[in-house]
Image 1 (cartoon, rainbow, N blue to C red):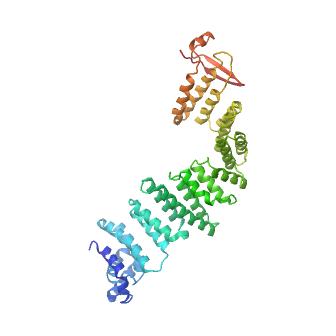
Image 2: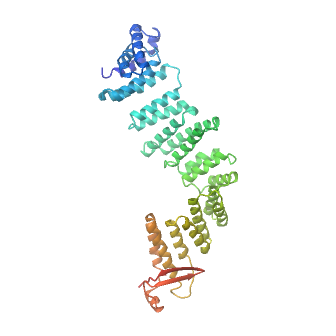
Image 3: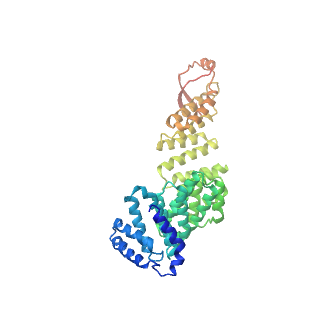
Amino acid sequence: MKNLFSVFIVLFFFSANIVSAQGRFGVDSVDCVKNLSFYKEAADQQNWKEAHPFWAQAMKFCPPTASQNLYIQGMSIMKYMIEHGDPALRQQRIDTLLMLYDIRIANYNVNKGNVYANKASDMLTYRPENLEAVYEAFQQAVMAGRENTAPSTMIIALQKAVELYQAEKLSADKLLEIYTTMSGFANLQVKANPDDEQVARMRQDLESILATSGAASCDKLMAMLEPTFDAKNKDLVIRTVQLLNMNDCSDNNLYYKAVEAYHALEPSPGSAYGLGNMYFAKGEINKAIQFFKEAIAHPDVLRDDKAKYYLKLAAAYLKENNTTQAIANIRQALTITPNDGKCYMLLGNCWAAQRCGDDEIAKKAMFWVAVDYFTKAKSVDPSLTEEANSFINRYTLHFPMQQDAFFHDLRDGDVYTVSCNGLSEQTRVRTRK
């Protein structure tokens, strides 16, 4: 009896054509009709436990064509028995539940996309550890439902593909192929339902899942996005910029075109900042400065974003050797994010870039200030320790010699004010022997 359900179901698959010639209720029509009636009376009251033995007999005597409810209600019966029946039979009953879906699809005119999606959902519930089988079930559901696939099914299908990729059981190319197919279905849904927020979010979620998967290299992303890029399609332009930004793919012609189109269609702090980054990467620093300033000045700029924009503007000024403006903008960023280690790193580089003074102390005192800022950077952001130490080691070599400091009546630890190119900072003397 242990494998009774599975045996019955397999027999139904192979005997469907034979029994169809013997009537809807098959050769055992009396037993079939009797047990259909008995199980249905209990099932209609959702008394699944009482319905179960009669349902099992109906499965034994009835051909697949006897009643679609035999499989629809049978699924509810099996789910109840999986949760409340003999634990030793749990896996067998899960097998039976999943096979009921296939029998129903094989013998009835049903919406296959929905039925496969429900099967995939049950696989995720009852066999979550079998990642490859769950993945296959959701892929089957998407390919059956195509542009009519429910957003939740589409999202889980791609998530499972990503999990397989991250488990090294699916190639990056295959993952991109799956995403491209799903993206096509999603685009058709958006076109058919332009005001449906759930459908719009689905497409964004699919993009985010791919972007964070680790599979989307810049070259592959561009190969996927460039053929369909349209600078006049605002939605497509925005999604292209977002997808490339999420993968740090900002140094390519597609990104430049997309950002320029984005800014032309809908000027925003983000689009101005994107253009600033683009021109910064291309070495057109004056244009970069122009767009970073525009991003900062935009009325809709967020406070934390503004700090980031100030810091990038400062980096642009430093590229132009305008350290005064660079430091002024770093100070603006620090008023918003006072514990941003990157600000202190850039301040250190600004001071290290100074050239001033007539004597051995004045010519090298700026390196004391630079090291102070590198030390501050790693103290507020330990992730910068390695980079900061590299700069500290480099610029410590430029500290004045001890005898030169002694000649100027200075000792290690003395307070010293560095004045250089209109800038002024207080620090302490440190020397080399």
